[in-house]
Image (cartoon, rainbow, N blue to C red; front, side, top):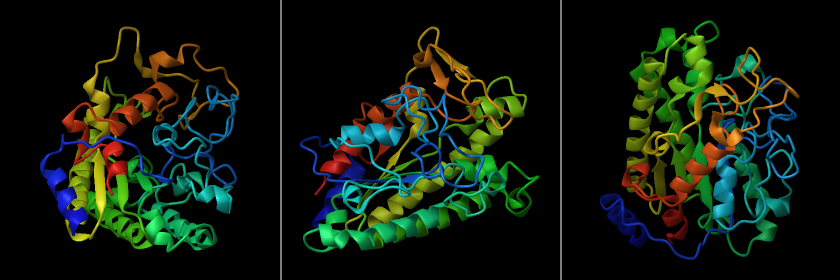
Length: 350
């Protein structure tokens, strides 16, 4: 009950952040292509990034499955947590490496199992959570005491839901969702399933969970071009806002009703809207030449000034945007960035 009282107080004072020596031994990561670090490499899917120019700025210039030129948001958070090694994908992580965490994220995946299926295989959220259960079963020989008590100290990071709109609701030629649900009903369906999977993580031992809200999908180069928009596609952005509003309510509910749960919401839109782009910064064009599905053309040279581009391809940010987002989520300089606490504070909660 002490944990719950402390977190409820933080809910009432969202800028009362607590920073100190980090107490998080591991980082478990769930999500879609924004966090994928290679889980899709061996899948039969068009949603892959294991070729240049993806990874052109990653250490060693390695195209390893990250849908960006360098580090993902989750990579940056891992480093800020003080974990030296990159968190390995579920497909290749050894039992020993899993002590530091596992990355389960999968490109084109969503909350709903069918999202992204027209692109091929993917690991949707419920299956990622099941994979985490397999990891938990393997950890006992390496952990003193009950595994859930070890996992209580870990940071869990989740970023998913974009493909339920990009590669489901707004693709009526492939999916019946638009004909079945209005936007409010669809968001409710997504949040209900999201809540079930967060509860499942809680049963495994997850307590500190940072959940990223969706970004402005309607402002991505792909959606602007496909919809022949001058700037952003406002209908899609309104759908995103509806989802995010319901997600915040879910997080508040789980914090109150799951004993010891410490969930926090990261407002991606607030973070990325806080600072206007500097002169010369390109927020419309893609850094790489894109194919018809708005991924990078394989082995085609990217733009030379990648620090001045917001997007690597039609949907995925460049490393410079990922750095900005991760740093603001980790130590929030603005109360609107997080609810109730930033990730550094979350990691330090006992």
